[in-house]
Length: 127
Image (tube, rainbow, N blue to C red; front, side, top):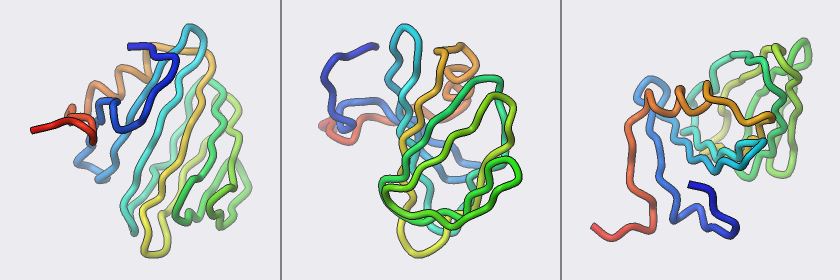
């Protein structure tokens, strides 16, 4: 569902048992906006994909690798992964890492990956 104004508390979550991460997605006509959450000590697995990605870390700390560059990053830091450039890292410190990804162009493979997760209700839903 595409929304023009939204709160992450209203958006379905997807949980992934293999790394304990959660993701939420908003899709537009030409891009995806994803909110990812990783637990302290977990791994943001190294991967690559054919589409561009900009990311912004909102909270937590990551020992991040993009291509041949590795750095510790914190809130407000970001990264760019061009198509087919490997990227990922280790969540360090005691705080969850929360970051926003923007993928362009919008593509089915991102939706297919989310479909492998367990669909969780929005944070703001009433049981």
